[in-house]
Image 1 (tube, rainbow, N blue to C red):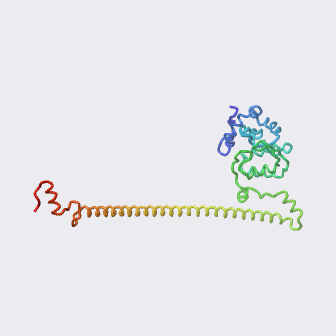
Image 2: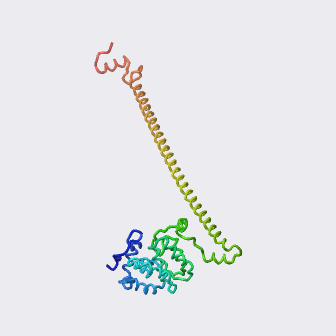
Image 3: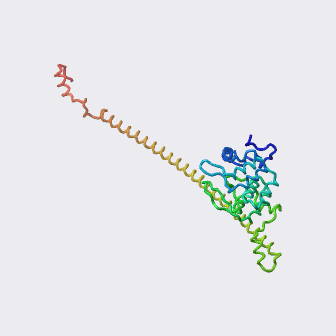
Amino acid sequence: MANRTVKDAATVKGTNPQYLVEKIIRSRIYDSKYWKENCFALTAELLVDKAMELKFVGGVFGGNIKPTPFICLVLKMLQIQPEKDIVIEFIKNEDFKYVRALGAYYLRLTGTALDCYKYLEPLLNDYRKIRRQKRDGNFELSHMDELIDQLLHEERVCDVQLPRIQKRSVLEENNELEPRTSVLEGDLLEEQDGSSDEEPEQVVEDRRRVEREKERERDRKRHRSRSRSRDRRERRRGDSQERRSERRGDRDGRDRKRDKDRRDDRDRRDDDRDRRDKRSGGGGGGGKDDLSVDETNKLRAQLGLPPLK
């Protein structure tokens, strides 16, 4: 019962919110000591206190897949599904950076593409240092803007597969999202002289042109890869046909050689038979049984028989 999602929870991406975390990690979290001691009967109000106690971010670590407190609280938020206003307050919290990281991670899992770009992109200006636990259990130094950039662009963060979201360029083309202007870009524009009103528009156009060129380059690469794969398939098909024809030719050659050997053996046996017949058949004397008349009479005389006439 303690591991079930609340009854009035809405589905996220068409499934149970807790199913956004893989089953093996989810089961490890349920069996962990932190989940049993600190996440039991936890409400949205009490969750804030637990989030303020976080000291680092991370997914799972160690050979036996131990979950971190950060990923345990993420699963607890998926289970109780707090209100969107609470999640937004987590993100806007500037005093506790790990509370902000927890809210940003939860919004990336459950929010729409518009909400992710709207509430997470401003956090790219947060350059505070954060501790992050790696898969081997060691810690590394990172920054808040690095974590937010990974949430927006990578497919897997903290050992959890993130749901897919639309690209920012698609939302900009559909006029659902305004083009993003970097803080550094604004500082550079302030330093430039002359046409201060026209320069931002030119920069935006240049950025859009660069993005379109990148998209075209990616399309060309995909087309080349498909062409190469098609050529490889055709070469394999041609090679297989050549091998089949070679095997067929070798088989025909073996059949012809076998027939020729059989004919040679048959001719050889016929020649041997003819020679034996010539030696044994009547051919003008000289045989063992061909005796002269005198020799026959001598033999008959020895036997007491009358001579031949």
